[in-house]
Amino acid sequence: MTIDLYSAATPNGYKVSIALEELALPYTLHALHLGKGDQKRPEFLAINPNGRIPAIVDRDNDDFAVFESGAILIYLAEKSGGLMPKEAKARSRVIQWLMFQVGGIGPMQGQANVFNRYFPEKIPSVISRYVNETRRLYEVLDKRLAEHEYLVDDYSIADIANFGWVRTYDWAGVSIDGLDHLTRWLGAIEARPAVARGLLAPPRKGGKTTVDVGQKIITV
Image (cartoon, rainbow, N blue to C red; front, side):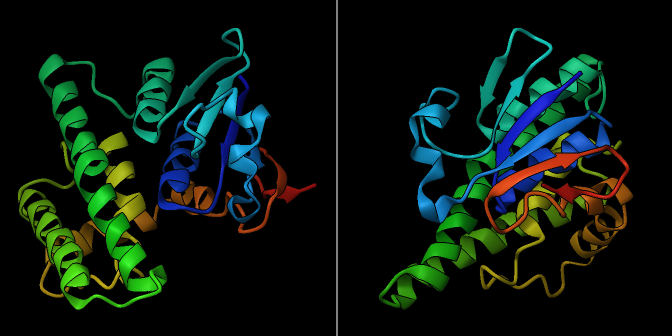
């Protein structure tokens, strides 16, 4: 199996590289330089018409393209048979917590990032709105993790998706003080070797990287 991953060093990008490493799927990473507009070039828009990363092309499935990070995680889990339970209710719970990130933490923390770090004008009320809402969502995770080692018992794509964003809490200006269960969960995931490998890719500069699962990443 060969997967082409088109990505960049963002929370959504890391979600997919971590999943590929966890699933031990061989892949070639095409690192897009977002500042140069690589994601808007015609050749990439043919893969993802929305012009956003990440996206994959499954070379072993008639060059099938998948975009949107949540959809990619589901596709990879179903294709490989890993990181997703087969029992219907457990599978639904994984998808629910995946959507919690896609529809909640991602948009809210993303706006916290923008207004806290990049927006030319500091608007305290707006920053407070997104930071506080992100913190509230973290508290939901913390409450869940008080009763579960991972979000749905066994480690899954739901954990990977939420981890990809929550690990950057400080960058967004969000505190995790007092969220002991969330802190424990972050540490457990960060300690996984496949997660460490997934966080090495994509690099922060554009280019093409060939990745051998379990081996050192070599930039060419």
